[in-house]
Length: 250
Image (cartoon, rainbow, N blue to C red; front, side, top):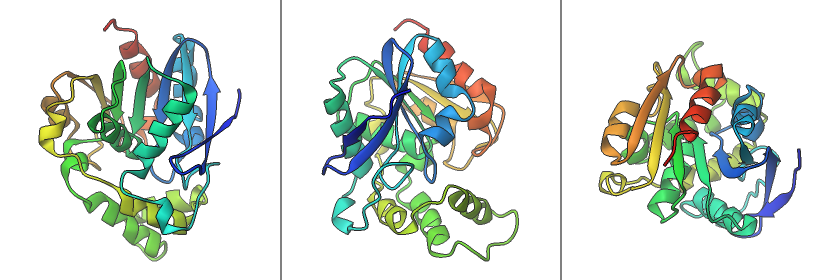
């Protein structure tokens, strides 16, 4: 396992872990998480690598082992997509696949909207409303960042705050990052020609409807597995579904 570092759009350090050999696939993690938490800890990355893939897992800025600048200038709109465009250029990738979970899926869709053309894309932990619905989801997390304590036990805010604390998130940096989210109009989704898998927990409604998203994308399949937004990514079926779908010919 190698851990080279790369630069984002402005040169900010982006930590990357790679495993496996073969066709490249980039795996993008969710908010308050990391490549380790979303992709390696529960075995999804290893399963994808064992299917014959070079698995590339960056930590987004303000997450994991990547830089977490506190300067607002380091957080323009679509900054995560801009960072991934810079990373792809530095890696010299021209023919590859890409997957994202939750915020990683949002970033993946922004990359597609900005012109990225991977072979296949896996949009996981995401629904239609989470992409076209303005900044409501970001606003929810901004509340948690501003007030990490005092939420009713069992509430969505309490769960998000606990996850944020567990992963020792830099709240100043993430607070700036949450202002960079950009919605993708439904008309743009309907023009995405990349072959996509929409993969979601059957009880995951955090970002809206995954079936509705699959219906709007012109070249998409839908797979639902057991779990909700927090648990589906931990299930063995998560990595299995991705590896199996990637094995289907274009």
